[in-house]
Image (tube, rainbow, N blue to C red):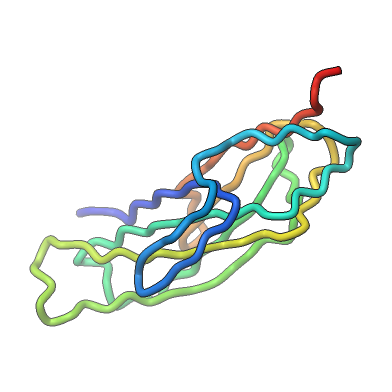
Length: 139
C-alpha cells in the first residue's frame, strides 16, 4: 500500500493556481540579517505538493505548517487547513492525484540566530522538514 508523499520548498513568494505552483525566488534555505535581532523577514513562501495515492483519494485530510526553532518551539502560529482530493472517473488504478498548496508568511519574526525548521504535516504526521538557517551578517 502506498502512503501520502509530500514535497516542499522555500521561496520569496508562492501561488497555487489551477493545481500548479508558481514561485518567485525559490530554492533557498538561509537568511542573513544585516541588522539586529529580532529579524523581521517580510516575505517567506512555502510551496507544498501532496501526492495522494489512488487508494487514498476521496478522503478528508488536514494539513499543517509550522516554523520551529531547535527546541521545537513555534516561531509563528501554526497554520492549519484541510483538503479533499477526488477520484475522477478517468483516473487509472494505481495513479496518484496531486494537491498543490501555497503558504505565504509575511512579516515573520525570527527572535535570534538559529537553525529553524519548516515542518509540513498531514493528518498530524510530519511528512516534510525544511531546514532554515538564520544568522547575523559577519562584521
